[in-house]
Amino acid sequence: MRNIFLLFILIQISTVAQEIKIGVFNKQNIKKVFFEANKGKYKLYIDGKKKYTLKGSRSLIIKSEGEQIIVSLPKKDYSGKNIFLKGKKKAVISIKPVVPKQKARQYYGSINILAKPNKLVLINLPPFQKYLAGVVEAESGTSAKSEYYKTQAIICRTYALQKWDKHKKDGFNLCDGVHCQAYKGVSTTNDLIRKSVKKTDNFVILDKNNHLIEALFSANCGGQTNSSEMVWSSVIPYLRSVKDPYCINQRQAKWEKTIPLSKFISFLKSKGLSIPATISVDSFKFKQPNRVKYYIINNQKVKLTSLRFGLGLRSTFFEIEPSGSLLKFHGRGYGHGVGMCQEGAMNMAKKGKKYDEIIKFYYTGVKIKPMKQAVNLPK
Image (tube, rainbow, N blue to C red; front, side):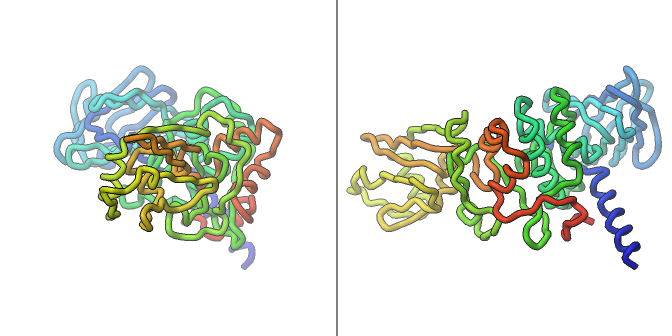
């Protein structure tokens, strides 16, 4: 019986690790696309029927027309609602949106194109490890140290598995934007990234109950990470605020922005706050030596997250200094600040810290284990 259970676990791991469905160019309203096989062959299926083989210098154009997809081949046009370009494991295809115009990207794996009214849904099905390498490059750049790339690979693997069904209603697992994880296709410029993904193969981050954690991260925390409930409503034990001395001198550690006092007052009123016409300008002064959740004025409060998004601020970690008819925002960090601070982690790696040290610094009370030990792997 024990052997049967182990076999089931291995099959489950193999399933989630082999292939993932990613909605690419997901934020663009794609209507027309140019495809070209860069490496290997792609068999073209239209509504389940094979019609063509894309290889070498061959290319094709696919466009949306109402609720149909039109496939333009050298000798004939076809229409359908489900287009599948099936590529083998190492095949690479170039996708260049024409309407609207976007830069071409290269992708491993197959491509599925679905019809929506006057729109194409593009789904990439890369091998899971190839996807992770692409994510690590898109999220981290190409000039970090190996230990950082190992850290980011484990975090991105954990995130993908924990959020596996985030876009289930759309026909894919995850999108390619910051709503999920940034992904721009093939990782091409730094072989160290691919090696780091391979060296950490199958490792994920688990909480004390062996659940995959919600592996959140942001660009720079400004010297102190955020606890989960400071940004959202739920208290998550492993997403606790920690002081971070590693990021405070990094590129995105500080920012400034000046806003007219009148604009700020209008914003506060739009959030239901009552601001007297006779209020002193000094009343708007705000200090935040340590992260807090609310901005308080005249015994009223508003969430700092509301201020961040409503006023286009880089983070919620800021102070306000009144200056006549203006308010000067002196800010720290970039992003929500919850979980790993990327610039801090990069600096930790430069200082010789190992990936497990970096992960356990930012996530409280977690374990780094093979994914087979996770009790909530996607099925």
